[in-house]
Length: 295
Image (cartoon, rainbow, N blue to C red; front, side, top):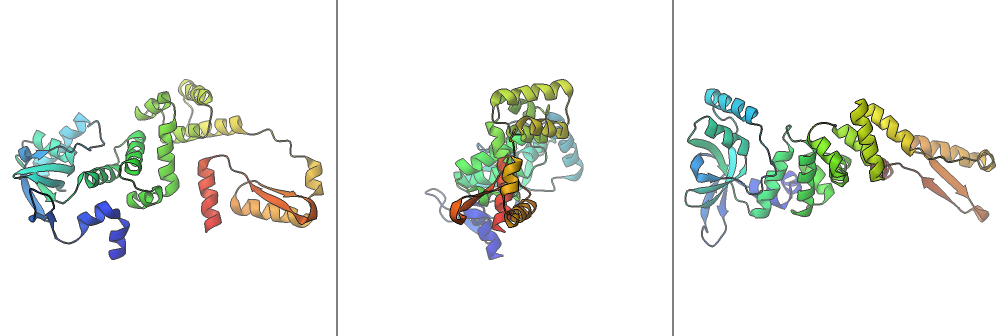
């Protein structure tokens, strides 16, 4: 268990240790903070200023409010104490909003210790686990965790339960032209479409392909094929050079290409010197190659 706590990082591990913590600060020294569920007045809870979600679906909130009226709140929210009878929401704003719609005066809550950086970290990590976030919201959450919480990308992938290449692909969405980001945010194109467009370096070409997607309603597979053809290099692999490569080098080249799943070039110079070149077409392919080479 100790190993798992350390893997959560400085922010979350501090929140999960033990059953009782204390608020540290000039005004609330030695004030106990319970990790058990307490009932708190909704009027005593202020929203989280670090909340990464910018929009809440009113229909879904209404449906949740009806569910709360019938079943109650199953999962408590998480808050931190900021003063006498004052709390600040760490996670669970959707439940708080729906509880107010349902006419509740109180809500079950965990009360935890967190500074501002930990507040942001917890809110972002908690929201990334949601299924209703669009890819851009997830990308911005990843970016904020790296930039504002100073979390390394490798640690972030462990923290949110996604592999490093997935985290990298989300963050790269923020480099796309604003027109493509808007189309992704509004659900006009999917994450798969956007990932295919990322591999195009020229912004003008990216927008041209976006227009083609919209006009012809292309599937992700069709876009991937189109981009692959667009980026396919016209390399005249000289038959003479292939023939001049000694047999055991040709065999090694074939074996390496098969093992790595990428095209390999072997260049032979004088006195036995030479080089092995591993080709890749995208950052995602590079990450996969790196993983294979390190395994």
